[in-house]
Length: 120
Image (cartoon, rainbow, N blue to C red):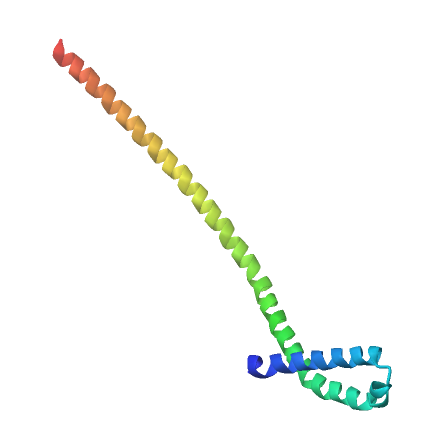
């Protein structure tokens, strides 16, 4: 409905308003001044529904922005928790890697001592 009715209506309203203003400025014959009531009525007739559609679009946009702002604290809290979990995971993985390398070095030394004792 918005695309089929609102957009053409708003565009027509803007075009008529711009046309009346342009013709009023550039009219040397006085035709626009003589028919100013007609043009004002036409702009008013088109402008009423057009303004309703514009205000409805702005209200929807405002509600969307409000929803985004309301969800912002939760999103930020989740991002902080995700960052902390990621950081803790990196620390845990580094500890595991270090423990694994230490275990391999201990086994290598143990194997070297065992091999050296058997050769003697």
